[in-house]
Length: 372
Image 1 (cartoon, one colour):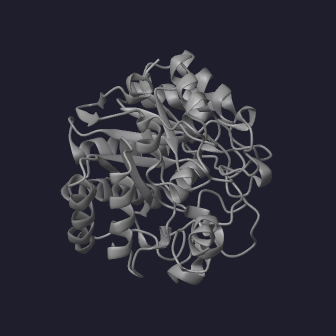
Image 2: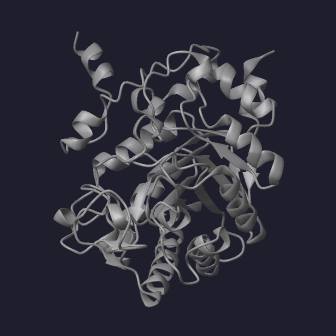
């Protein structure tokens, strides 16, 4: 079969947003924004390289919706109107390359570092998580303020020209913390059974929809499992997915793990063979069997053949990748040209070195090869 006519290169749409293929650049922290969360030329250049590389949709790294929800230095923000203009310039540059872009809106909650924000982190419950440092348990008023903040950030994303917004409900960030019994010990209407633990996410989704209108795509990134003791399990995640579908969500990106899940974190090492790829595939299959809403699958996909099989065998509708594009932003164009060798990403985590050192996101392996 001519790979140029593969199912992966079929044009599709999500609530009117046109995608030229089924490949999605999943959100990846870049540490390249300015101190206040505004965009920078370096970050815009990175987005342009991704757009030129042929991906069907770019999802930005997590964009914090309130100052105390910032997860790390150099993180994008949309917590105030002053940030819209710079964001718009980045979006316009991506559009000039004929690629849509979605803003992923997020709040770090328990894991927001006070050393960076200067503010007390918000927690779903005070008796939760691994840290003994001070956290503020969210009041009902705090939760409603959070819902409003997500809606306002989504409005700003739309005003900046984004083609969609993705709500980050995965990886142990605040909305994921609400979903997880490991973090959510509340006894009010936001705690206990899964329909209560999902309430904050459902309210955020409804508020975002209200803010952006009926014709704007709203996506959710959702954990299929937390892989921590007493964490979110698959059956509960499927219930949440059903609630999101009933609430009119346009697509769900299936992921898993948290930043405290050890070897079962969202970004795993040692993906050196096809059997180790797509490590959330069976969970995604369960979602496909339960839901009709389009599904994006992320997590260790490196081979064209694996990606194609996932769509052909109805595990997912879209293939999300992040780390492979750090080394090869033009990976999709390469595959479309007929060079179907697997992505050159080694899944060794060395890209975290310069990232955490404040030098921005880049592949140090590729950088070393280019210096030879």
